[in-house]
Length: 330
Image 1 (spheres, rainbow, N blue to C red):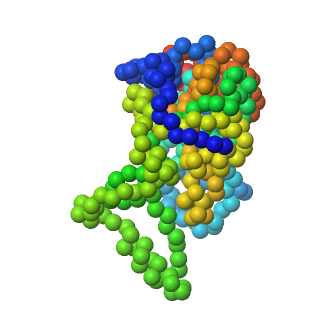
Image 2: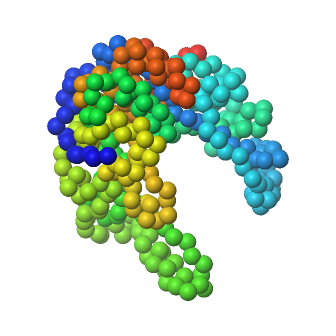
Image 3: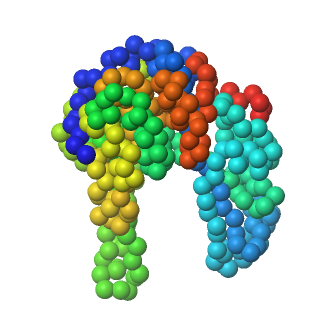
């Protein structure tokens, strides 16, 4: 996949989003498309194998939790749809659902575990701001079929991801720590180095800022930005149909090679916005949303919502995705 940095496109989007923000999805999603779909980011749930979770609250059951942890329990973990979550917890799934109301926050004790169902599953929130790579791949098959320019389009990445951009500062964008056992060859020296590398705010006040590299090249980090109200992005031009490949994250210029060199699996941030050169649709994964909005033709939205491998529902233009917008589960 060949990508080229290009911050000159996108003016047409600025004309279709609300400024100032009005508390609807159009703070970040362009108006004026025939139809819209909301693609729900998967949630997560886990439970111990062969035994129940210890009781809550933690403080009143510290011994039970300590014994549980010391037993090194096997834990089942899986993705879960919003519809499955609503069914398990007795709430109602709908296009305007909000996760914290879907999981009935009234049964959650502050600073304790997430909600649990009668089968022992414990539920955790979906990823916010990014679409799962496999879900994006599946979605792209529909996107490519509903544009005249599947090989040409634009991808915007929110500049605020802490590891993405180089910057002037006293500390790196991120640090990878390696553990060692004291007494092993080099272990003491390694641990001593790690201790020296951890600084305090007081120490930092005496340091001079210097350039701290990010995932993207210094040239891109120091270039201009694509601006939308209250959001700035780095914009790339390229073959958007390539996101249909399951390993698309291995072929983008924002692939996290440094993390891979430290033992992590190949990865890359999912795009914040995608649109084709013919402007037939837009995909928006807003940094504060736990779902992704697709704006496009009625045919595209019908195809996305009918795909059993996507959890998606049509959503009306002008809808709010604020945390308190889910009145059905209030």
